[in-house]
Length: 358
Image (cartoon, rainbow, N blue to C red):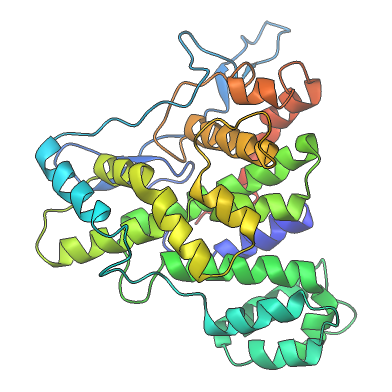
């Protein structure tokens, strides 16, 4: 297991209670029943017979009638209830009567210092030490087998210097998203856990795709982690409406509302968090197939492919996609690459290294 597998597996371990069944993050609402996880990882589509020399069919092998383009979300029933919530979300797009999740005050102070021409680790450590959660995350990471030396590090300043700016930046954004999803005011846990696992899976997939698109792996990881951050606002509005007496929102409705509005809400959060311009642009529009002259074409194609992979692995509403011949994979030049097929084959196990299961 590599350093990033260990790091984010460890950080995600205490995040929230595990779903009813271990495995994929996909879930559905059974008729009249509670939210339960029902989809297992599609490790293979068929097993070879004991007497056969042939290998099992990989989980990503195209099935009949598989799709080459992302599917358009369809509003679930009852349509009237969905329309009420959808109109409510639209009314928030102008920013009125909407509280955007704020970036942790300590993180907001630290991030500019990480990118300064002269990084002052003492000042950064002083800021981090103000927050117990961030302090614990930093010390837990620096004392892992990948970083610790002969002696255990108990000083935040020593820990910050040993980890370095890149690891600290990723760790702080990881903690910020976690805090936004699992809001202390009471998140809808059945949906919060789903969004958290999906974010980690998307980050893992984007980091893997970065090698094929010649992009920085850490930047791709953060983009995968944050690209659907607008769903956090949907989560908070659903929580508010349920507390106000609105009937419990089922999973299909929640997923539909997230898909319809997360880009607009994500743009608001990205602006409030002062994320880099390119990341803001990608968060605001990552479902439309990019034009050939788009300077962020590769990143947009990778996000489209990531969302398709997430759906096939059931971290999102399951879909039947052809992950090798789909348009995004073709435009990224992956259709005939053996290393891409090999990466897909091992991907479920790689994601498992990022998501800690009870």
